[in-house]
Length: 391
View (tube, rainbow, N blue to C red):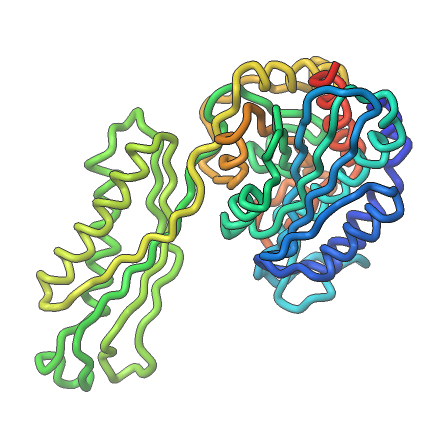
């Protein structure tokens, strides 16, 4: 069945480009949801839409009894203004598919078309999960609450782009057993002082000074508290305070992210951020409140399912284009981790990095794009995995 996906290449590119023009952020993706449900209606695949967000659970029931395998595609975009000069550029100001989720939708729809055409031959069922809010790490948990994983025996997902390494050429499949991606969480620090005129700083307590020291002190967690052989990240991405050059504000807000490969390290980072923020602010006669917005745990592939994907990839792209070992897990995160807590499965990567086509640009960049020539391989991977798992 998987070989039929190559004949869908032109259709896959068309769908991807149509989706690329209508990026939507977060949980509410009405245009994207309608696009997907229209395609499912055309194929005659039954589905249900969530009452919580714009996610969709569809199912292809095979002609013979068997297990149920789930395939997932995330649908949300990012709050980025696209800088690509292409005729399928985003039509939604300030929003862009800068992480490849438009491709994920197209590739899963392509796989669905082939699988549905052969449903009489399938021994089991194929559940299609179209998820919102991966970028916020909220969508997977909503789908699970909506029953997406009820009765599922195995689950698989994939990510396109240059997310692992931009030097891995387009068309290669990367699949590893065990931990393949880090946890990812967001923290917010509200630093509070007392505002005053800039000419008389002694009359207030300066939260900008406090916040600056907090940022510097947080770097010491990785530099002096985490073993050199452990992977962990503390990054500050947002620092805001003040409205005038000659006034000391009353509050500064800091936001950042932590990444870890092990749950104890994840908890340790959060604990130390709060301790350091509060004690540093107190040193300068202020206060700090820390809010942890917990994202997703590490993505841990089941060894048996990773081996199944590896063998499937060898058949689809050829053994020479399968990467089954990388120096270290990727420190990016994915809420696909929640599905893997409910059933054995694997998350793999399809490289679309091509310097000639300028598609080796990092994810979450306004110039991000993909080498569309590999799209049929993504659909073929999903189909071949279903063939291999349901035998």
